[in-house]
Image (tube, rainbow, N blue to C red):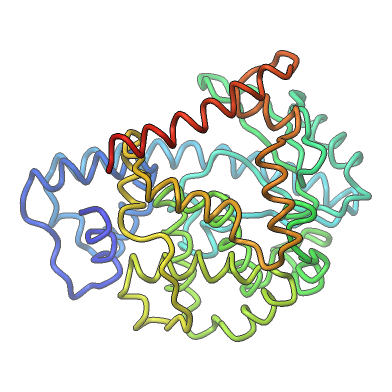
Length: 368
């Protein structure tokens, strides 16, 4: 239901649903996936919002306005950070978030965001951390040894969730590819009035959005919409030949093909907008049910998840590294998965293995 509705937003010739009950289910899904700003923006832009029931319009507008206020605050905070870094002559590239909403959707409030992501050069990490801390982001989270970012945050008056600044020096884990972030820097272009602040090229913006969606295994319709909007916005400017050649060099080809094939198969309309030349049988329709309903965990869902975990890599070496990390996660990653701040012991690994095995066995018994 939601997928058909979202596809209709990109096809102005399609008719919107008529039944109120359909809209009641749609608004629940839209809220669950935090995509109200996108839906509201599409309908307003197409002058089709009035074709939906009043209760749907009101709830959608309320969620949009909440996102507008939050994005406005985050935009203000981001601009302060970028201005400070520019004055320090620190090259920085904002990722996703407000800038992506402005670029791909046409308005900073057309896509909700909850944090600020910055790409920097590793040598500048300590300077950037000091700069961000001086702007009030003093809550520092422990950084995983093999990860590619660290996080600082600060409390927001009236909000139970702090605002975080994620400082990235890469966008993929070590030893899982031959990805070279310097290529992104080489093609980055100046951003607005800044001297040292840049933005990714359109080619690398699309590449990064696809990799980000893969990293989350397309676990939200928000990732689908990010990719769809890039395709809609860029159209003929997307060069899949160049994208796949880059992916072959970087050993990210399986990730890119898997992600884009799932998106195109879920939203076939986009084959007419910008045809995708690859096909795969991975990630079929039941994946959406698993995303929306956390109790829906049949064997196919588990098998697809294992395929994502272990077979999204282009080389045997990278696959073995992924398998090793899953079987023997670091103490940091285990603590994160177990949602604990206490010291990790051997028994915690046993609990993890029991949890994984029992979940898979349950899926075999309940969904045969």
